[in-house]
Image (cartoon, rainbow, N blue to C red; front, side, top):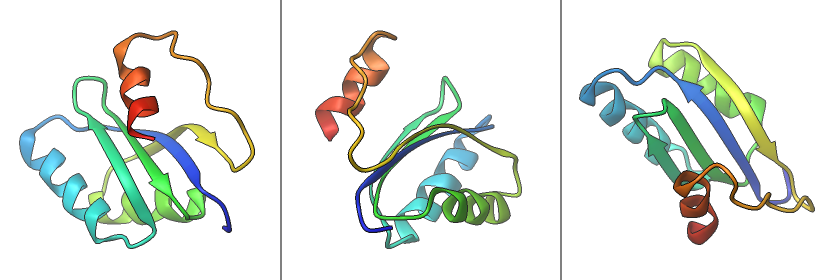
Length: 95
């Protein structure tokens, strides 16, 4: 991928050690520049230069949990306006 990609995934993060494991997996991937883990909603948002399918497969293999891709923002697409509440406004401020 040549441009910046933003991907939102759903992963079952039911305990603190699962969140820690997800965080270390994401931090070790050089393609990912920024991430946001929302434990209450079981969502993980990542931002960087990567192929979304490859990253989802790598996370699934390392976490040994199902990964569901909820949304992908490719280069050239506009970010949607925050309508779901504070969760999306946090991502927009970080970007």
